[in-house]
Image 1 (cartoon, rainbow, N blue to C red):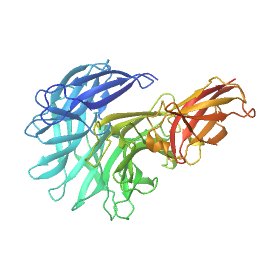
Image 2: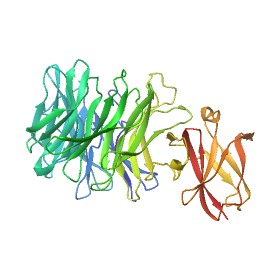
Image 3: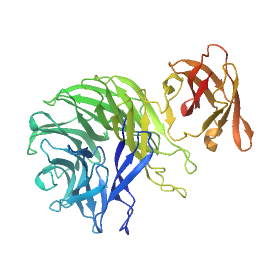
Image 4: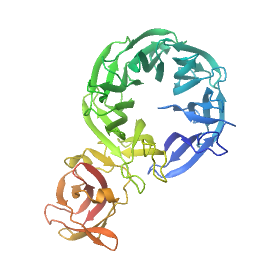
Length: 471
């Protein structure tokens, strides 16, 4: 499966003007173990990356990240950052001819250059922009879109057929009201067609799009339900002429919900999308959603994390990509708190998740009834011994959980390698030597020798799993 390459904003190495921010490239091995990180610093400035999918790999193996810089007069400039094939920092290029231009996404152009989109402060107004650079990051052209009536933004750009580009964004349609905004532009950024696709309510907007193998595109967004600020994640497919082919909504409505990235798993096949929802304001969780080629949901799973500082850690996924083993890798941000009252030790961290084809952190989660979400970082919460164990014997299960989760009803589910639920028990733990233990008797039948997965969950949340070898 190789390595995972992640673009990020890391800690400021020199004295910071405001807060820590430097453009970083992180490498993890196939098991998700940290390998290296390399940073690019711009003297006397902080730097940032595009919000979603703003890194490309060139044919010579180098990596390029699109984003910007910010100096002590709060002037933004578009910027590109280069790293060598091993992930080490090389150079950067700023476009100082375009002050107050904030980059939201960068992508490869049809030639060896790059295209970037975002929003620019023009006088007292915010307008959307698209710009094109050469292979060295030198500006070739730029175009502004929108009006001075309301603020307008671009969030994503993709190559389209015949040397053109698709752009997704949000267009102001009223005071504090925006609709998803879709455009097709030619090779110089001139508009071919555009339209908004909103509702009579306050749309969350932000059209995040991906070009499909058939030349059309699909975009993710959030669609309001008309009940206050409630939203549902949404996918919409649009053909090259700007005609909507289908539109689908997912999950239950929450305080806000948005798809931030969508990709085609195989040409003409299923789609995988990621984003966030807000079941309880301000509790954010990340989600992944797999659909067929018509946008019909195959599964949708929520994810969150817990640690010694926060037992309800919040975050979201910006990007998702299929992996060679048939699963998916997602990357985003752990925010830890939206209240402004973070406990000591709280921070904003990179969040990386690897799941299988069913969206499970460990295989088999989809077989357990009632599971609506998964905790992603309790890998050491569950241990069994003896292991291996004879069929019909007893194993001791040691469980280590944060206090909030210890108080919930817990169950153990034993699942075979061929995907059968062979045993399920509610846990009645005994506290011994500072650890929670439970004696689990194994049935003689239908257990046959082999490798099983033992899963720990609450009635609605998967927590951890470990392998159990039955002899």
